[in-house]
Image 1 (cartoon, rainbow, N blue to C red):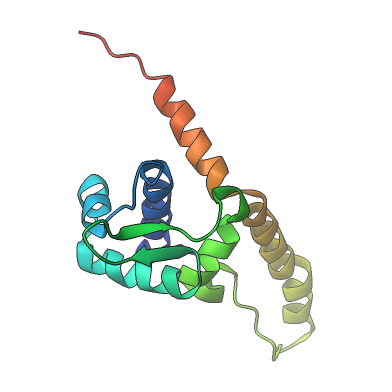
Image 2 (image 1 turned 30 degrees about the vertical axis):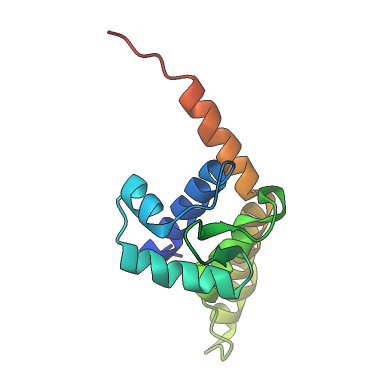
Length: 143
């Protein structure tokens, strides 16, 4: 399993969006600047997220993006499946070569895939936003 930059940047952008959309629609440019992610790459990511209904786009002078669902209703598995497809899971060869391969598929790879799915299903975008905000509250600045 490997999460690509599309998945990692997409999660960063969605957390940024969730934090900053409280006051207004958020532009790709603003997210790009805050997160140091190329605008063009974010446009590609946001296109996938918009098609899946995870975000909504608004046109015009006050345009930008907002979440299409409440952060508590967006699980990380929902987001990663849109951005990564099924590549977040270990690919299991359906045409097993022999009994040992069948055994490993059943007793290792399928179990790992279930653990990954259950873990990413148990975390919501709201969880990540809340944990991020808490981590920022604990920072003490010294002058």
